Image 1 (cartoon, one colour):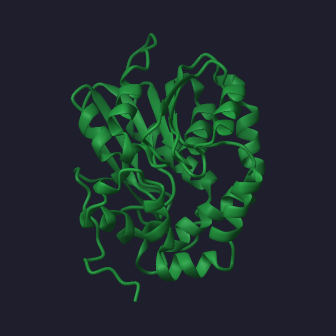
Image 2: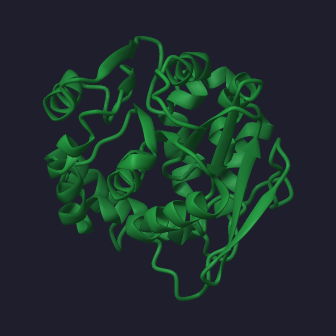
Image 3: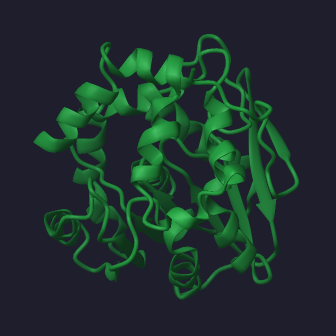
Amino acid sequence: MFGDPWPSTPVSPFAAHWQRWRSAQVHYVDEGHGRNVVLLHGNPAWSYLYRDVIRTLRPAWRCVAPDYPGFGLSQAPPDYGYTPQEHAQCVLDLLHSRVSGRWIIAGHDWGGPIGLWVALQRPQRVAGLVLSNTWCWPPTPDLRLFSALAGGRWPGHPLQVRCNAFARWLMPLGMASRGTLTPEVRHAYRAPLADDGRGHAAWMLARSIRTQSAWLAQIAGRLGQLQDKPVTLVWGRRDPALGHPRVLRRWRALLPWARVVTLAHASHYVPEDAPAALADAIAQTPAPPGAY
């Protein structure tokens, strides 16, 4: 009833690169040359989310976009916990081993707190941050309710693991540009989580909105340590979850020096709805002294 009519393996539009991390096989995109930008996806996406951003930037930028273990083309070992802390450590270790110099970190959805944690571990390596439709604080009542439903034992777990509900139904609701959802694009997002219980990865991130609230609070409490870093918030106002003005007000309180770009036409998945605006925000991040 819920099966896909296409083969189960998606195809990345870019050459595949691989990094052995602990006992996981991590896939990442590494395109272009120039200043480094690290593109971090959220739930239930993978590096494919940034394909149009990468195509725009790669003539003058080195674009690195990993898939967290269990997402996209990356494989997770049986003992992997799928927590945001593990994903963040994976990203940090990948950058240390594969990307020299300074990085701009661009994070969307869960890529926001994951990228901010990475930045707080190695602030001397961070040249700037570009955040789109994300958060980094303990859940508000609406996010807690979403987490309880999508990340609960019932109905969230069977819906995600058996029906791939996040990629199949919820993700399209977070896109304003429905015309871009061709069968090929739908398949690219559905396929990675469709087989062998891989939907557990997306379920765990939905659950982590509640269960990792202390970790999120620690990140929010340390953001003042990044006050010397240029930050741009690129915000889709049509986002049903994070598009409300109160979310941006909270970000402005946490990052009062941040530049804000609001997009009236974009919803939650800004890299899909407004890749040119996101690429422009990255390109406009000023370059600090030091080698890339």
